[in-house]
Image (tube, rainbow, N blue to C red; front, top):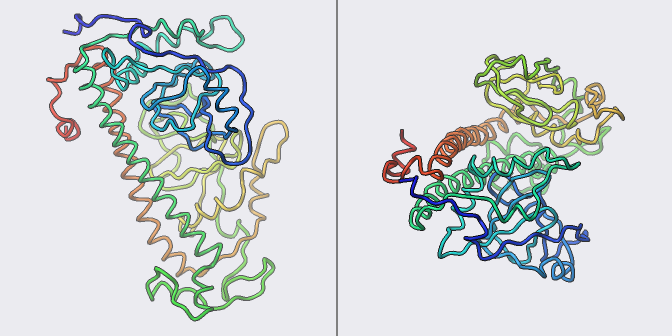
Length: 415
């Protein structure tokens, strides 16, 4: 029974616990084999290396003199913010920046992934959070306290079973997210090829059939260019102001205290800020940050509520085209308010863009709508799996729910 599982201090079941070098490592602009993990790279149980800073070999050696990272090491943020956790899955040339702790388990006593999920559990998060507002200017976990966290320790085979089940769910979530990134990249590449680089037009101008295009689609592109106020554009295309193509409508104020719990996402300039029981806009649509995170862009398939720090898009043109067009306009650089960052929609409206034929826009929409639908379905599955994991994790880690009670993951997902 779970009551038989002893509490242990994390230092008693780890081979290594190391505090990082707590000063800023000198970074370089060029790409090198040596990357620094910062607290911003550790989120939601994973370490994202895509935004790492690069350093020279000498810096890497200096910052890893206490210990290098190994595959399976668990990393904890002890400040800015407290209690984010991730596992090292790529260790070559990677090291820890400031405010991070490194844990390497004793494999005879503790499974590494079980430690990761223990750190993500409410019990350990509560221990981490007890350091919030501790009197210092910035809330942080003291290095000494990072050795004393207490966790329940079931038998090793039970740990491994729990970690395998939760890991399978997380791996599926990660795969779905990677798939969505790929689908999004395909849509962006297609937009750039057709409407920015004019690849099909260049091909037809050379007497070639555009690569990967069916004849009916290729026929929608002209085979020559003409001079316009924006330089060369495909023959027959028009130069239009943004306000002739779409409207940036204002969101509506909705304080957190006025929201009624529901399933409708509430969008601010930083993304979803909560949920409400009523929608202001039927999806799909596009949300643009107006105040705060200027020029941020979000696609939403469902009904949603945009608050007064954002615009949402209305257009008779396909919204897929509008979305990827807006991504090319540099909206994040159009801050017009020195005190509070702000996006003036009249400045956006004055921008000129090259607009293709309605038939070509329809063809683009036919292709990209399919991609976006797959992205949406994957997001629904991600949300379902995330809810399943978040329900199972605290019960499994505490022993409230035992593995024999669960059946297979397939049965759980079908329930």
